[in-house]
Length: 568
Image (cartoon, rainbow, N blue to C red; front, side, top):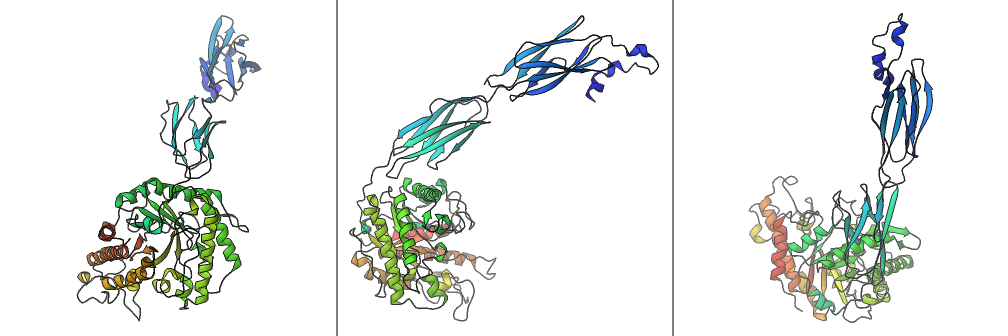
C-alpha cells in the first residue's frame, strides 16, 4: 500500500500494451527529507525509484545503510539501522542519495538516552528535630520519585523545567538513628539518595499521673480505624492523615486515643513478631498528634479477642507470653516519644464474655486481668529510657464502673512512682447510648435531660440522667481519684438516631439530647477527676479533614470541657 501510494505517479499513465510508458525517467524516494529513530535503536526502510542504481551513504557511524533488493520497475529498497543511543543528548546525521544527476540528503535524528544525574546522593546527620533537604538533579525526562520511609515526605511538586526537589524529614522521636532512601526513576535509570537522621534525645518526663491528666482538656478516639482487624481502612474509614489530626486540634481536642489492632500485623505468629511497617505506621500517627502538642494513648484494643474474650477461663501462660511480646515491641518502637504518649494495656477485658452470657465477673477472672496488666507494666518498664517514667493506663474489669469499685480489682505493682491511671468506659443509660430497638424490659431512650423530653413520647429517658451521671463519677472519685489515681474515661458517646430509621423521631430534640448528654458527661467527668475521651467513628467528624459534621455534638463536648474542672 505504501509503495503504491508513493509511486502511483509512475502507473497513472501506464497502459498494459504500451511498454514505453513503464520506463522510469526520474528518481523519487521515500521518505523524502528526514528519518527519526527512538533512543533504543531501530531499523527503517528507505525506498528509491530510480532509472539508475542509487548510491546511498551515511555520514555517521551509529546509522548504517544496507541494500536489500530492487524490483523490475526499479524500486530500490535499503534498511537504515540506528543503534541504541547511550548519550544523554539527541544525536543527528544525514544520508546522501545520488542517482545520476539526482542528489539529495535525508536528515537523521535519534532521541537521547534517559539522563538522570543527582548532585548529592547522601544526607547524613539530619537533626533529630527534622528539617527540609533539597536534592538537585539534572534530567532530560519526566522522572518518578519513591520514598521508602514514611518520615520523609516530598513537600513540593516539580514543574517540568525544575531541577530541585524538596523533602521534609520529620522529627525523630526514637532514641536511635534511622536511615531512609529516596529513589528517582527515569525509564530504566535509577538514582538513589540516602538520608540518615540522628537519634532523638531522651525526653524529659516530669509529669506524674495527676499532673499529666490535668493537662488534658478534652480527648477523642480515632474509632474503627487502626483497630480494624483486616487493615486500617477495612471498617470503612480512610487512613488517618495529618490534616485530620490538625482538624481535631482546631475543634478543641488536645488528646487522642488511638485504638490499635496487632494480631493481624504479625510477621511471625509463633514469636508474635510485629511487622515493622505496622509499627512504623502507628508511630507515624502518634507523631501527627505529638507534633500538634496533643497527648496520645496507644493500646491493644479488642484485637480479635485473643486476650479480652478469654478472661473467665482463668490465667493462660500463652496469652501472657503474647501480652509480654507485643508490649515489649510496642514500647521499644515508641520509646522516644515524650510524656505526650501514654500506653493502655488492654481495652475492655472480659466485657464480651460477661455481657453476652450474663456471667458475673468473678474474683478469679478479675485477678486474671490483674496478672495480664502486671505483665504489661513490667514489659514497658523493662524497655527503659522514657518508658521508665511513662504514664500507663490499666483497665478496670470490663471497664465497668461497678467492677472498678467492687473491691477486688487493684493496681499492678509499678517501680515508677505515681505513674498509673485506671480506665473505665461510659455508655449509660444503655437505652439512650447503645440500644437500637425497644425491648420488653425497656423502650429505647431518644430524649435525655428534662428540658429535651417530648410530651407524650414513650422514648423519654426514665433513668440515668444528670444526677445519675454525677453519682457514677463520684464513686470513681472516691475509690481512685481521692487516692491519687486519675481515671481515664476511655470511651463515652450516645448513638445518633435519625428519622430515616425512627420515623416518629423529633430530630431536633434528639440532637439536643445528644449535645446535652455530651456536655454533662464531659463536665462531670472532669469535675470528678476523670479524663474524658469521646468515642467517634466518623459520624460526628469528617475523617478527611477533622471538621465537624454534627456541630451540636462537638459543641456539647467543648461546653462540658470548659465547664469542668479537675480536682487536682
